[in-house]
Image (cartoon, rainbow, N blue to C red; front, side, top):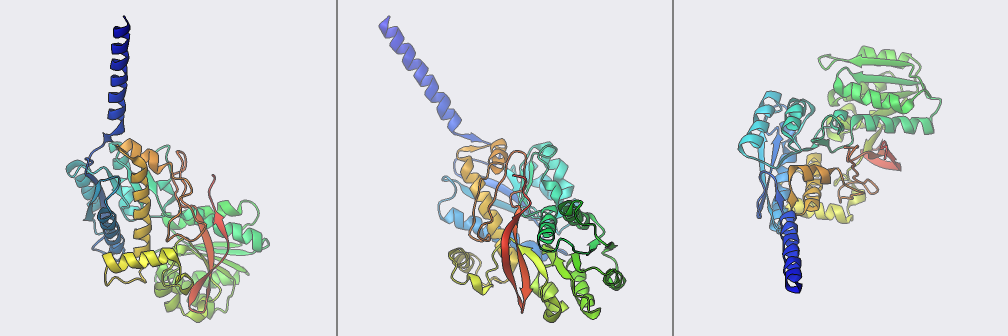
Length: 402
């Protein structure tokens, strides 16, 4: 009787051990004991080909990780395709990655129109559609699209940050707004208006179309409105026009310029540095060209990475910082997955990032996600243009509900 009990106990223990062993490893498509296959879609050609450097940086980053032994012993097989920023091509490439290449997930596909084209497909297929390279707010909708997650601060969150600053520092502001009449412009506008709430009502709000040859008439009307604060929600070409025209009109409001047009090379320099003084925007990543970071440990590490894995690359290209940062976030998620590399667990871990800090994010900016909040970065710091560069100032603003 005693022997039977012992044998039964051994059998039960053995069954328990087998169950534990089986639970240790769970693989989705594209995963083996030695490999994790992830897909990517980038505009390596076409009108947005300048962004292709993001995909090249991600490939280089994953190569570095592989050279260091991979993730929990597995090497990343990064399969990246060109869609030329054409939504129909994006659909074709996504289908190829999911149905032919059998990738575990699609990581950081670029652009709002391309991602919109595969949004429903990825969710119907229940394939992680992770850390998209676009700031549209709709990527944070875990209830209706539980397989899609953005990465960068979304446009509404940024709009709220400008509103918070105005309410605190110029509560009696007379605000004029110019925005691009499409989903991008309306996204920023909604965040800004939500942030203002019922505390300030703008004195004038005007739109422009991307096909407009000029925005001179809008700027003239805005200046004549008597506004002393200007929310400039424009893409680079029109941002430069707005800055120039404001100077011509001798209009000097408190000027807020959305982050997507904060480029010194493509906006502020063409508009004239003398016309750009005092403009306020936001930042969330370190600029490796900024002398304030010359002794920063994270920037030194980034420089070493570029020198070794992307020799000859233009270090002034912000896309290299973006690619480095979001690849680092992807690696963090895969590390958290351990040996449970199913699509379901990838999404679970992506939605369980807690106060993650990265070398090339500004100090104090942390990545946080939860099951009901799929917006990893919701903090930005304000910056003001002085001389020939941006200067960070003030507190870290957050639009997070957490």
